[in-house]
Length: 357
Image (cartoon, rainbow, N blue to C red):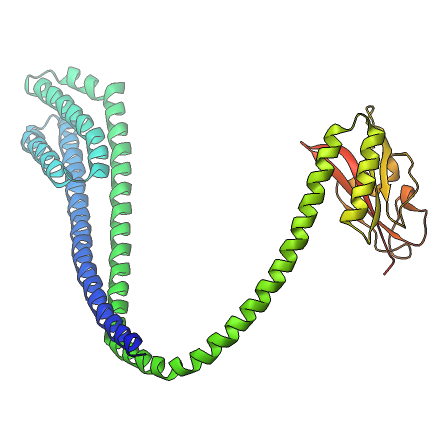
């Protein structure tokens, strides 16, 4: 008894230590999750700045080509530099996240290609080759660049939003878990001490219950031994029948072996075993057994509801269900039919005769 009480106190102490460790880990995990959420917000901000600056550079370039006012060209170069700086910032922010690096590696060459394209139109514009610059921005290459960048930007934004939602969900989960752990920690010690007190009260009662359980176990063991002996006898009979069947030279011998052993395996039962003929249109009687066994005969597949339906057909009684034609005689028993199937192919039929209920 003292040993169990001491164990209870020890468990209470270990539980408090465990809860403290869990609380600390939850706090660290929460800090990491908040950092990831903040990083996702910053990435989204720089990604948005990149697209705004890139769109601004293209707008100024097109404004010049439409109006030929040089004021539009003043800030194109500086805006392009800001786009390049945003790429550098994004690469620095995503260097430790493979998912973010994946979309950045796709977006980066497209943006750099677009900047090179804008640089070429800027060079033509400054050289006075306005017509060539206009032709260049109307080219399929210009349109293709724009569509590809928008597509990748949308995918990147969706990915970042997914990371953001995931991080916020994790943060909420960790917060709830931390609150739960703290609540458990505040009450665990009291519960454990109450448990030790309850253990002291229960120890005396458990002795009597153990004796009663031991007696029930002995009775159950005796029943199990009896069932095991019965099962062992059935297994022995099945083994003997299998050995004899392997030595049979024809179906008649096999039928005689099955009849004799089925009577021993089911001393109170009656039935018959049929095999499918080679033409698969007739069930041929192989063996019958028991006092209520039907006469050994052959019948067509349509005479049995079990064969028609492809599953066992249990007869509820001649006054309650439709009876298989091959089962009508004798009229003093109910007839259950069970198809014997292997590899989705019907090989035979087991017919069990039962006394009417």
